[in-house]
Image (cartoon, rainbow, N blue to C red; front, side, top):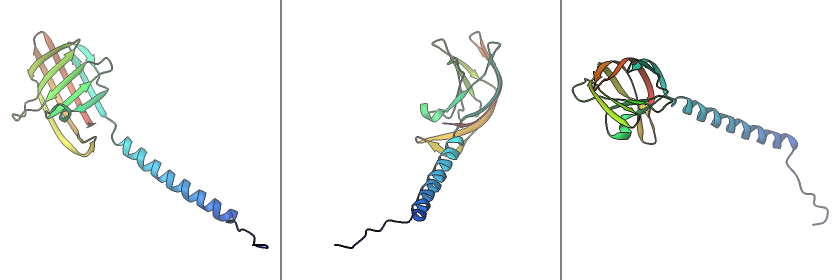
Length: 149
């Protein structure tokens, strides 16, 4: 094949291809980040446990443990579980220092499934106004939560 010269794509075409790849990669990354941002727990609370401030920093849907409700967890690992039984009177359970203390019926709560799932767990959102005492322990205050999975 004497005299035959191999042709290369023009610099313009190579640059255009790179731009397309970067554009699609950027779009994919943008959609992925937007999706993940929508799944971050959103919690607003003014709560107290035994008179001390309790500030939940994460929440988990009760579906993980086969109940309708939510677990509210603070940075120290203390957890308040709010269970919504068919009577619509939430039951509060406190998990602290290896103890499990059921405080019984505790104020009011509304909870609803959201339209999103993470690892086959449906996100929940809701709010609660709490006031209960039992076994020398007390929970009070209010909380709103969203994207708990």
